[in-house]
Length: 171
Image 1 (cartoon, one colour):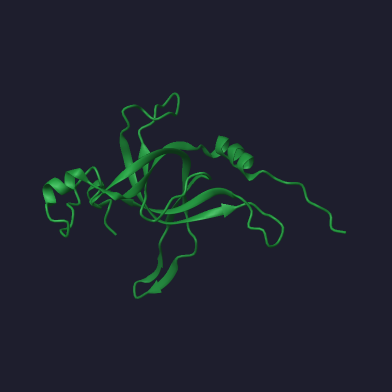
Image 2 (cartoon, rainbow, N blue to C red):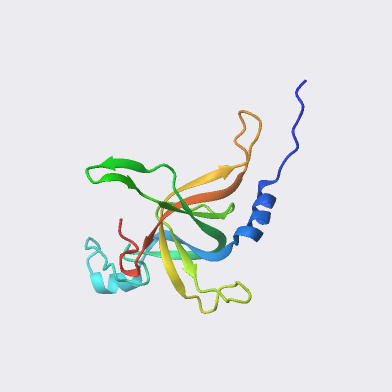
């Protein structure tokens, strides 16, 4: 007979880790493919033209976004992207954002770092974007379960690339 191991609630463990690492409030900007950007449609006129990349509303994607306030933290990670070139070994450091389990980020989304109140750690109102990160890939991280059971999603790991405001929507 196999002995059952005690269940560890990874969400609670992340909360404890957050006290040391420091979660912060960010905005998850998710694309709404059903709604065209009103600013770009005024300027573009023809739906087949490329939206202007300097558009602050849609970051040049041509679609509106919905912003959701989420807790997360950014970490500089290196998941093994080293390769040899004529110049030598190239090492591309990747930035990773960890966000809450109940949000489902996609590669069309952005993470926006907001201006936070130094005393409370809460976003200042009105929201002011400090930095923009384009999500390149997002993976759900699941808790350990018996073999054959995937386990619940504990949080998402998002590989991100920092973008300038003018080029945020470009690939």
